[in-house]
Image 1: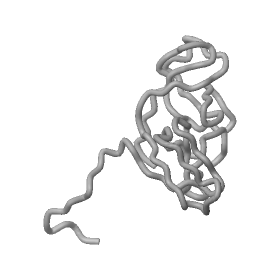
Image 2: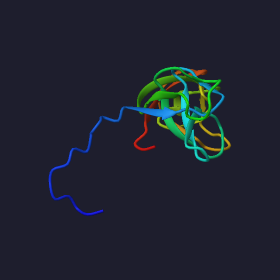
Image 3: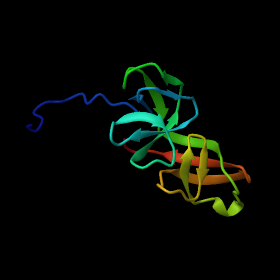
Length: 137
């Protein structure tokens, strides 16, 4: 491709919400931590799963339970501050990275280290606030 020789409308959008096709036989619930599975490029609930890349928080439900891969899409929030479940949290967790255990639970460590954000608030031993800011994907 060549350099521009005239003005070009690059179709800017703010990027806070992104639409992703959902993996076949998959249901995503609003508020879920969601990820892109590297082998398919499709959205699925986040977990402590190899080859998952954190995408954000589901902005809406997406039910592809009966559909083929990509038949249904869901919008995903790429930034914000959200409350999720955890086990054994303490004030000392604030400022540390949060790893996904499932689509509603975070921890300081996990087997596959799917990082979802930074813990910004200790609410209780079972709840923390996580700040997410996904710049790409």
